[in-house]
Structures are given as structure tokens and as C-alpha cells.
Amino acid sequence: MNNREKLINVASELIHSHGFEGTSIDMIMRKSGVCRSNFYYYFESKEALGLLAIEKVVSEFEEKILSKTLLNQNLNPLERLDSFYRDAISFQRSLFSQPPYPGCFFGNLALEQSAVNEKLRSVLSGFFREFTDSFEQCLRDGVEQGFFREEIDPKETAGLVVSQLEGGILLSKVNNSIDPFESTCATMRNLIVKPS
Image (tube, rainbow, N blue to C red):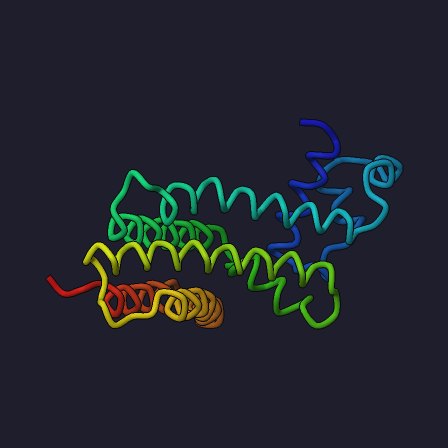
């Protein structure tokens, strides 16, 4: 791993746990072991590094979660939905195993930066749009194939699901318990899936 990759990896970890404003260049250099001159060789600013850190986490989410669950055409829509919820709960549990629980990388940044940094807001908006579109496609397939309730509107429900996920994570963070996230996932699944 070269110094540029080290800086991006460390920045993504620190931003997740400390926020963008709470992560200083000095913190990134200390944890990565990269000197200041190398930092500025690769990046003109903390914002430039932050944008690449977000892109890295988005890419990992697409590869490790979306492509294997909601977008996986080898699974039927119900299997896609269940695999997504299973993976999401497993990931949030893993974050609880190393306290303090940081919550959602994307949700945290959206709350912190959307009103003050247009570049970060725009990248985050694109992520949430793609995430919502992935859910919409799974829901649309599920309605058409008879797995999900016919009365749900895939587009509106996809937006609701993403909001539910972020809200569940926020409540889990506030309550320092995975229970609110697990509960809201189970409730939303029951509202989507057609009773057998």
C-alpha cells in the first residue's frame, strides 16, 4: 500500500469516528505515519482527501453490499432484500463490537456537512440517490414477481426504506444499542413482504 492509499484509508476511518471537522490533518498524518510533505504531495487540502475518502467508502459499499444483495440478479427479490438486511445488521453489530459506536459514515457526514460544504453534500447526495435507486429496483422486481405487497409504490417505498435505515442507525447510536436498528429493519421488511 502506497502513502496515498494509506492517507485515504486512515482518513475514511477517522472521519467515520470523529467526523470531518473533528479529523485534523495532524491526526491523519500521525495515524498513517505519513509526513506533511507527502500529504501535500498527494492532496491540496483536507477537503480533497475527504472527497476521495468518501468515494472509497462508497465504492466499498457498492462492491461489498449492493452488488451482493439488492443488485444481485442471481437471487430473487425476496432473497435480495433479506440478504441486504442480514448484511446491514451484521455490519452494524460489528461496529458495536469496538466502542464507541460510530453510526453511519454517510449519515454522520450528511448531518455535519450538507449545510456547509457543497462539494461533500453533492457527493453524499449522489450516494443516497444510487442507494435509493438500488432499493427501488429490488422492490419493483419484487412487486412484479409477487414477492412484495402490490400496494407499495417502489419509488416512494425505497425512499422510506433508506430514511428508515438512517433513522434506525441514529436511534441505535443515541441509545447505544443495536436494538432500534434491528427492530426498524424487521418492521420495514414486514411492511414490504407479501404475507405467505
